[in-house]
Length: 354
Image (tube, rainbow, N blue to C red):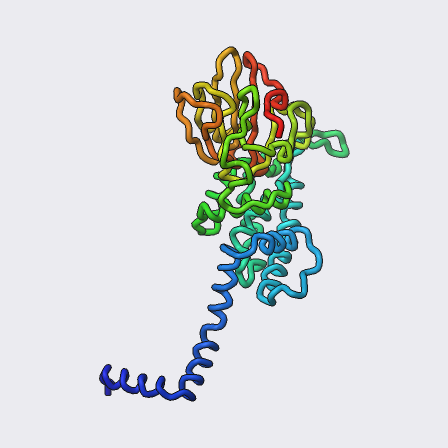
């Protein structure tokens, strides 16, 4: 027989009026909700807690080392699970790299940074389909080659080549399709921040802003740094000859790379007119070009978002884009070029000194 609601309410009120009963109920509720409370507290600490603590977790996962004794047991378990996953990923990345050609290879830090951003905090990420995950970063192509036998006879044989994907937007689409996930901007931003921290040592939040980026930094000659003051400490690749980070072969570098987290405001170097604001799949990704007159122009590559339109007139310090990791890029940064009469020249000759 159903108990009337009024009777239930009366019984509940009577129970809560008794101190001993309230204590027992309190312990029961605490026992039921304790795992949930711990989980919520953990994720709240990730989202709004100590940045240094979160950075330490990242580095412990990527670089190993002894986990501090003060680390909560749940957090220790998450770090150890991620380390197990990274070991599996390393083995699979090595297998895939053996299938590449022309000096190409997967960026292991990038692969693991994305995995970390998607799965850190799960109870058992090491049970995930790691091979399926790694395959999202490459395309496979069947090729043929000539093989000479012991008797001197040439025969054709087919083999599979792994080709690393340099466009992260395509990688994320592959992951969503293969693993049936819906990846958020917050997760991609976290992946970029993790990569930036491990690769470049830049500790940055998901908002992408760095000290000094909120105001223009303009020199006496009127030339503005595209990322604000302190750009010198963020140079990861100079203009001129270098070892290409993707092919690992000597190749000329047409600009200067500045390591900044995704979402950093990119500012126009001088007054001028925007001549290009579009996506280039083969190299620059989303990029902007500005004509400053007298044969001088600047280019801003690998952006995550374009804020200037073709034909727009800009002033030195105007925000024309947000930095990112699009196109032929191995991590979030700005590729900055200065061109004189179409010829690329060293940006250091123009950038203001901090």
